Image (tube, rainbow, N blue to C red; front, side, top):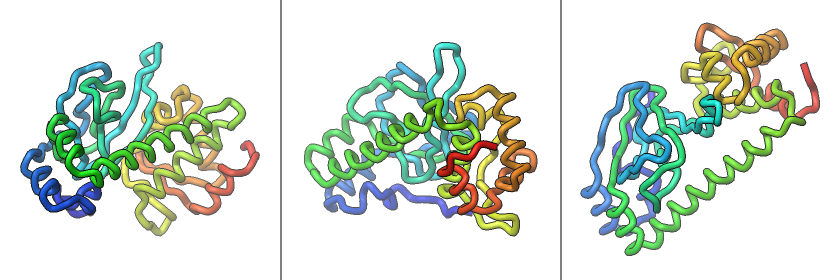
Length: 230
């Protein structure tokens, strides 16, 4: 089990000057949320920035048809908000398991950023990395990429980020229902179920209830990068 992270262990604070670091910790507070709690809603005003201390969240949008499209799965050390400057948000944030957040008022954080350029730089670098990940996902949404390869890529990334060694390969340490995978893939549930069965029949994954094991990380990576279609 991953040890609980304290606010002073956040990566964003490691290169800050002592005074802004101390002020950051004094201005914020830790809060706990149960599984399934929606912390952020699209177009709602939110006066706080949420730093994830423990647990995992899903960041998603809703399509015009009301279907969920998952953008990110974030865990400890990440920021749940999609922006820092504006009070309104353009995404939803929902906990996938019990979570703890370190919450700090947006105005207080911006004030600290004005006085500590290193903090500002680190936060901008973080947002740039998140934008880069989103751009990569958009490229992989093209119709020319087979759904099998897209799902293989997403499962490989989940195993890389949240994987645990297991006798059967790498266990993705989170519940992965067919519905959740369909939202992650942006495909119908029936199609996603069929693709999962194909990947399992090829020996790339093992599915047990809501748990998925990647039998060989290199093999599934090779499959994603190839032009192969099952």
